[in-house]
Amino acid sequence: FVSPRLWGLARRGSWSSRLSFGTGFFAPTPLTEETEAAGLSRLIVPAPLQPERGRSASFDLTRASGPLSATLTLFHSSITDPVEVERAGNFTLVNLPAPTTNTGVEALAIWKTEAFSFVANYAYVKSRETSEGTRVDVPLTPRHSVGLDAAWEWEGAGRLGVEWFYTGAQRLDGNPYRSESRPYSVFGVLATRQIGRALLFIN
Image 1 (cartoon, rainbow, N blue to C red):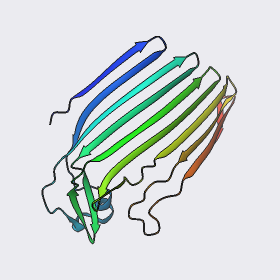
Image 2: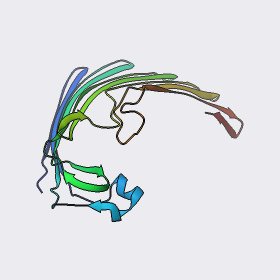
Image 3: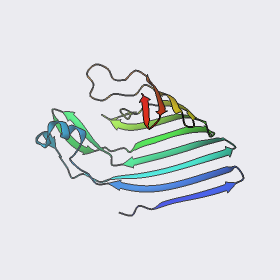
C-alpha cells in the first residue's frame, strides 16, 4: 500500500493557513464491536473482504492577536470499500458498495492570559454511509456539537474550572426503542485549593 501525505503551511503577520491531504488503509479484521460481544461463532464472511482505503483533505485558517486566537477548519474524507456488520440473525461482514463520507467545519477560539483562559469550539459534521441501499447518517455521529471551557487561576491559592458540552441529535443503530437520540448537555465544575502541602479538589 502506498499512502502519500502532503501538507503546506503559510504565515503572514498574525495570519497562518494550513492545507493538508493524505491517504491511508485499514486491513479487514473480524474483531468488531459485535463479535467482541457475541463471539466469532456467529460471524459469516461470504466473500473475501477488500481493505478499506481512505482519503482526507483539510484547510484551516488561523488568526492570533494578543490573548485571542481563532481557527476555522474545513475538512472532508472518504472511505472506499467500508466494512459493515449486517445483523440479520448472524453477523455478516461485507464491504459496502458506496464510500462512507465525512464533511464538516470546525471553529475554535481561545482567549488566554496568565490568570484566565477560555476555550470555545463548534463543530458541524455530516457523515454519510449506505445502509440497505439508502444513504443515511453514520451512527453515533452528531451533526452539531459545542464546547465551552473556562478556567481561573490564583497563584498560590487554587484554580477553578467550568465546562459545558452540548451534543446534538445523532442516529442510533440497533436500538429497539428509537432511531435517533435526543440532544444532551454535560456540565462540570472543578475547583482546587492549596492548603500548605495538601491539595484539595472537588469535581
